[in-house]
Length: 483
Ligand code: NAD
Image (tube, rainbow, N blue to C red; front, side):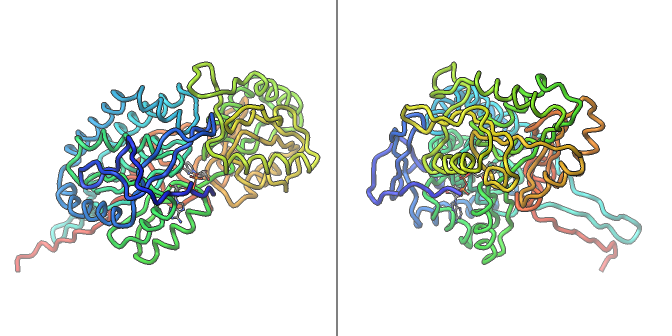
């Protein structure tokens, strides 16, 4: 779990604005945003105080009845415009995203393009009234009504994508929204607010930046009906406890410690680049990145060599350089956490077969690091590292691999890799996870539910399942009898 940067008491000028009740406004406070490729402050950001959160919630409550009465078609049209606007602003948003988050510029562009296409995909899903029973005497239908006001809280690893998913989900189902980005990466989300201001009626979308305490106020706020939270397990538990006070609905998209099980029949040279990318993309700061690789003993050495080769080829640098494939860790606290895991790994006597030596340059750079022959009980295997260091563990027996893969409180996703996809599918189905992939990892879509089993979350995003989490089922039961 990260701790937010300090929110300054001074009212500092900023090029960025909060979106409250259709107005772009300064914050009562301000916070500084650091470029992780330099370690230096590059922008100031407005931070909402408690009164501004109250204004945002009041504006959302006022706007929600009329918005909730619009048709799915009308809301889909607004979301289609939102997707087009994201594409129109793709270059400027991508540059800002790379500056505040650190990821390579091409991946920032992809993130924004993906937010646009996922938004369109969700707005194509229909949620019809369900006819549960109809006979001569009675008709029973199941309707889905908007909840009212949805509070959305996002993390720093994919700020636009992880905002767009819950935002569109809530808006399309007829809710008004108050959205709070991570204090580490608030800027793109505030720019998104400027873009959305003209596309939705005043008060339907409100965007307030601020520190962790702002998130806590949201979870306690009696004017918010549901919290859609993406972040760490530790914070997710606090959100759930705090939301209990007003019996808010919650969707929690939390951390993962995804296993990849690599069977004895793969070609290590073919599978290694795919495993590497799924482990190290965004420098490992992906909830559903591969975080543990279990390789069969027959291919273990060859796979370790092929993964180490990939690590040595990786180009690390400032994300604004188009040659960069892997950017820095996003913030100092997370960088120090990953350093702590590296130190623990070295102390344990595990073999570091690539990376592990820090470059001497400013910024939070950490090379892709592959670790072999590591103890199953080490921090690197037990914890969610959320950074560019991955263990490769050996197994002989598939049942043992499945048992070890499942021996965790996390349950976000996992994958099995084999020359024989059906053999792998039978094993993948035994993983205690929300998504089990075969010969791939990280594939998601707007029409497929995504979310965690066990402590990786509660509920689902995307698909009909995810949309319905922003709605209250209502039974309409009609007795066909004149009175
Ligand atoms: P975090 O839990 O520290 O913070 C997430 C958000 O919660 C931030 O906006 C923060 O300001 C806010 N917050 C902090 N304390 C709060 C409180 N008491 N009440 C309400 N809000 C509070 O997480 P992070 O470090 O920003 O993100 C990394 C974590 O997010 C990783 O564990 C990662 O796996 C997880 N994640 C999960 C998914 C998913 O879909 N399952 C996606 C991306 C990231």
